[in-house]
Image (cartoon, one colour):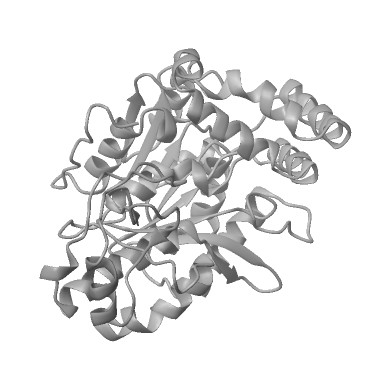
Amino acid sequence: MFGASAARDRLPRLWNDSCIHLHQRWAICKGMAFQPSKFCLLPLRGCTNPVALDSDFPSAKTTLSNHDRMGLSCPNPYGRYPHGTLDLETSNPDRLVFDIEKLLIATDIMNPKKIDIGGSHLDVIDVGEGPTILFVHGFPLDHRMWKFQIEHLAEKFRLICPDLPGFGKSPASHNRPTMRGFAEDLAALLNALNIEQPVCYCGLSMGGYIGWQFQKYFPDRVSRLIACDTRAASDTEQVRRARKIAAQTVMTTGAAPVAESMIEKLFYHRNVKHNKKMVTEVREVISSTQPSSIASGQLAMSERPDQTERLSQINIPTLFVVGEFDKITTPQEVQEDSSLVPNSSLLIIPDAGHLPPLENHIEFNRGLLEFLNPSMHLPLPPENAT
């Protein structure tokens, strides 16, 4: 966690990064253990702009104490905020610094860092403290597919969630992408972040394909492996041809038709019907991806090497995760791969298709915690939480 001076030093950067004018201030809930889900904005009554703490603590007390205060849930790309207010009259500077510290972490979540990896950069979410988990998204998504993991696990772990080259806001690589090339980019990212200890690698679908390469070429950097809705086998010739056709087509049609065609494949059908917000968000992520990145990603996956024979050589704890209703990578396929890894376990997520971290994040997060540290407990969110 940041110290008092570090929190004060980062306040100007907070304002700059968030494009907040000095007369607009942020406020946070008092007395809560930090979770991004427990951070809230505090608008002043009659004011449409959010308000905030000032680095000048007495001034902040005066400013806010002279207004009617009310808690309000506010939009946030990483989930929900509870209602709450901050009583600055009973706060002392140390308490304020601690609260600002949480605010800065929450702001980092909304503002990915641009990390230079040598000749290019990756947009990366880097939050929390503790053992490091490297979350690698699937195709053709970005770090936002891990929003519920960012929201609920940042108290216990350091979470590194990059946008792979060409996806999200990360620029495409100058070289033709491959699964090994993506793995090398991730190793360069860990170097740039000065992460020397082995990490837990968690990848979904294409992120899992990259994970096999990462564990193969950088075994000393991986302490545990989580393979989500992915397979070790390479594509069949039929699938390979289909990917090449899809790569050609997207350059003509754009990304929007790809988004529409993928929704039914990605989600359990009940989630498509009953969680329209989640589906809309994923559709928008795919639609905003550059067609050239979608095409190059398809070609890279079509050329990935078969890793089935290597599974028996993986000697670190490995968790295989799959949605109960995954149409892209079936539970049977994942179970067969899991049986080939000596120190592995299998977790089938109910009420989920190809995206369990989004579709059933409660069971997904619980499974991750039990795999990483059985003594950790994940509190259940309110029943009406989404």
